[in-house]
Length: 102
Image (cartoon, rainbow, N blue to C red; front, side, top):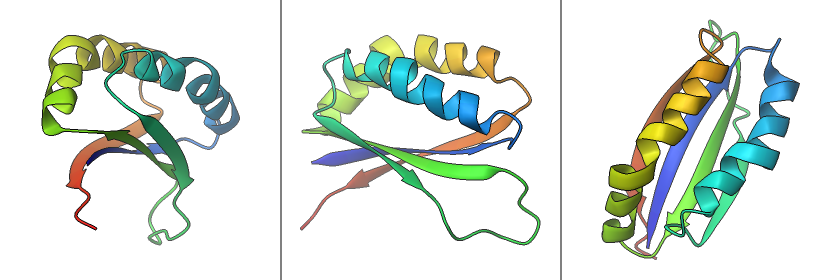
């Protein structure tokens, strides 16, 4: 199984709005692609002294790297663009791909 992890640091002024939008709009749209079996929203508790945002890891699980590739090829661009336009200048994000081995 594969975890597609999206780590996002969101400006505190947008935090509540962003989290509601993620729960009620963005994540349901990602899940509707059919590429993932489930997701988790994790709040990152450890921070660095110079960090100013509130940081989350959104973890989407899929059965294979092929399903993740399908998501990235067909859906990721438009979904990421929508997020970027809505929260421009208010977030930083990076993505990691993990393989579950146990």
